[in-house]
Image 1: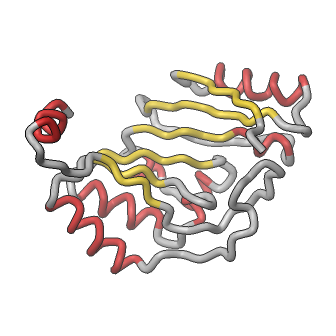
Image 2 (image 1 turned 180 degrees about the vertical axis):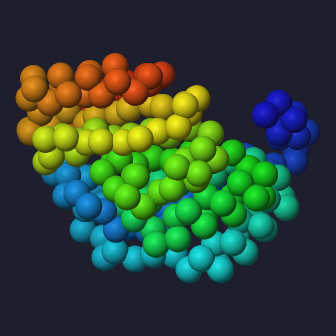
Length: 175
């Protein structure tokens, strides 16, 4: 976004990207999670639409759906993705992937610019299945923690091989 960088250099500041946490509900209790004790709140969809329109009007170019939970558990996740795309913005999604295909329609996944899947679900589940559209920019992450085993790291590697990912990021537990 060179146009935005140029504007910043000329004293005009506008946001480029908004990281949005539509819910703090999560289907895991990762030991390293800094927000594992949230209450399961969700944001009002009409208020989200109003806020997104306002940010778009001042130059917002993309939205990352992330948060203190898993955004795929937001009850109106498909409508939210549709609305962001309707506004003409790029969309990123950060998820643990466990509920991805149960709650996010393949049509909505096709509207994403990129997706990052945290595979720490392997600390709790033997299998994580996702169906992703062709051409989607896919990245993976895994937080090395007290549950990590060689078998889990092998599953992360196999997942990467089976889903044409662009990168795998393994980081230490920062807690």
